[in-house]
Image (tube, rainbow, N blue to C red; front, side, top):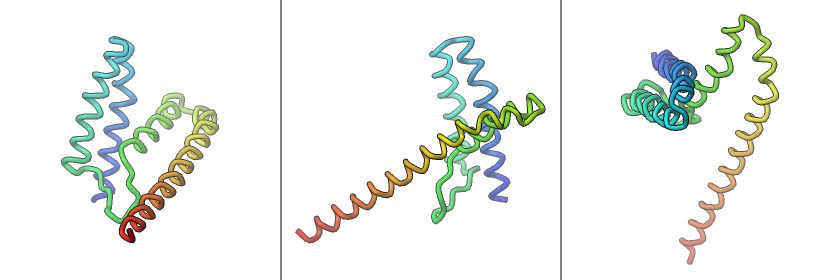
Length: 125
């Protein structure tokens, strides 16, 4: 049931972001985008994290609403067009995003090791 809850919570976040946020921004400009961010992301964060719809196990990799929103943003044009052409056209962007995620993960590990090293050196002093 936890996985189903996670898919539902992520899907709702993705659908609202991809369907509503752009309309707010088109109608009200930058202020509309900020309002949409506050309303959509704020509400979905409350439901998914505070209420606990999304399941993020302590021992696992932490995956947030952003993954679900990214999947929705990638696949929505595929379903709208009824073709996989938009997905194929998005592959270069997805590759760059994945490489950026890998680079970010590597840097996070390096920083974490450095912080631990400083803590160990502080205990010796």
